[in-house]
Length: 127
Image (cartoon, rainbow, N blue to C red; front, side):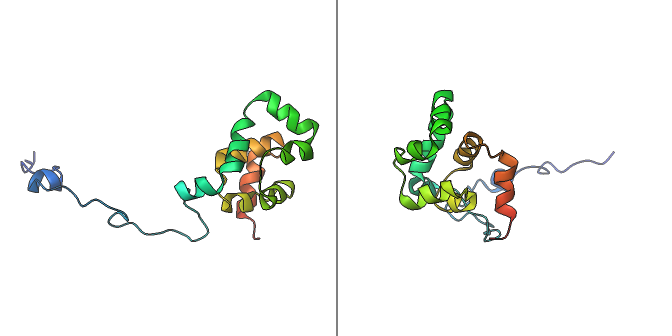
């Protein structure tokens, strides 16, 4: 049987006692394909109204109000004109670019009768 070195399997920190460098970007981090967006705090701020709408649509009574009068419900949702136009056009990638989270898009799509696989598929289609 082969003997292991006493340091085998130990982390570099344990060997040197030094902490790995911290900060952003992290060492070795590379941005991936440019068509993928990172959802961060800035995106959440940009998409606040759409995200709030998606969060409200988790309630059955809110979904019923949306189905009963889509235009009237969206008019009272506090959306910007371009957000409203994107929802009416079912432009899911456009809403994502405006800062909508995938959770909000899933709730919004479900309430509007668009299944989640169709929402996701729209991101793969050429624009």
